[in-house]
Amino acid sequence: MKTHKIRDGAAELAIVLRHSDWETGLQFVSAPADFQQVGTWWYDKGKVLQPHIHLEAHRQASHTQEMLFVLQGKVRATVFSEDREPVEVVELGQGDAMVLLRGGHGYEILMDGTKVIEVKNGPYPGPEKDRERIG
View 1 (cartoon, helix red, strand yellow):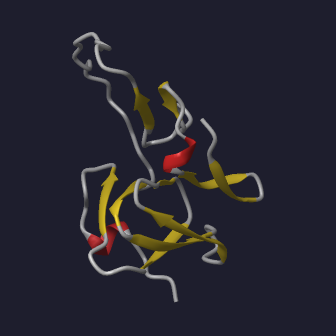
View 2 (cartoon, helix red, strand yellow; view 1 turned 30 degrees about the horizontal axis):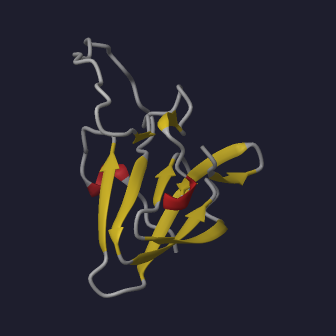
View 3 (cartoon, one colour; view 1 turned 120 degrees about the vertical axis):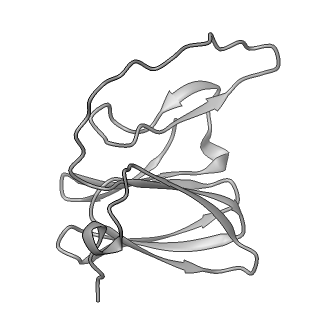
């Protein structure tokens, strides 16, 4: 799947998935070592995915990573390096998604009625222990 990767040197900060860039089948865009495993599905009617259960596997995450999916509207996202410097600004529209792997981020809503789904790894320790404001 074609993606836009936002980098600060060798560090991969974010992955942008445009609705128009999807490919058929199962496509994972995050690396196996990332705390968030993000993939896309594109199948035709009749495709059967075999039922399964995930086995208990103890994991340790040192960073919060999140993923945004724009259901409707438009969002401007600014991605920051781990040194809190702006690296890139990207606009996300309906059907677009972004996986935020490291560094920082800020958002501006560009359209009334914008709806976004956010997913991040947990458990959530609360804002005081989870984040530090930039600027």
